[in-house]
Length: 272
Image (cartoon, rainbow, N blue to C red; front, side, top):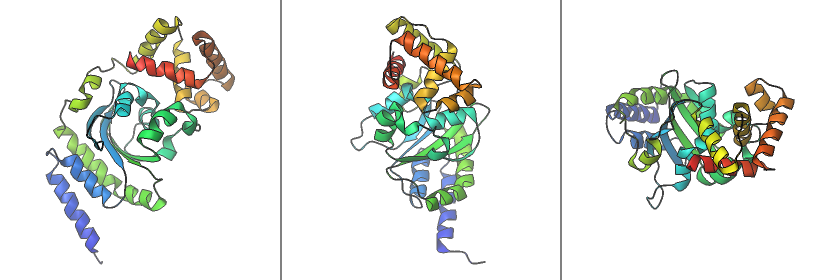
């Protein structure tokens, strides 16, 4: 069997990563290694959980070194509309996931895509997931200004077991405290998986004098994430007609006529 020079370089780099598992530069070293094989423009290592907002362990820096306000909005509540977050809550598993695999049918038509994803991630995203337990998922997300090619996806799929194993072994060494720039956002954990509902319900009641049902809130969030009526019906195990009825009642209570207006209300609730 012939061993190529690039194979030797890969194994040497992985050995160095194992040595760096308990070091502060682990994430930067892992990302540099991946960047030698697949080009990307941004990255973030974070933990998803139903019990609290995402915890950020490391991320690519803005060119001017200042905190990214769009990312702050994401951590405050926009993550609830993130296809990767939703997928990790609905089907928790270790693996490599592409945006095209997890994004709802109408994702690119959503306000979330137009106001956040298109500006912050730009074109495509891929995510390594490592399932830590029944609720927590450790993720390494790579964003690109161009679509990842079939060859790039194949290569990342090939090394996915290595990356997942490294993520799992890294976790015991990770600091419990989030990044300093994220601390104000992340030290307000949710009290449960449905806490976003009570927060949104309270905000809507205060700002609009309206009280939405739990089902209306579920339908609204899935609409904002880009799900079609059929997708919402399947996820909530109700009929398409019932979805439309919930949407009609929700719009009537809020005095709105569009998803853009609904998104603004959602965004205001997360900043409250």
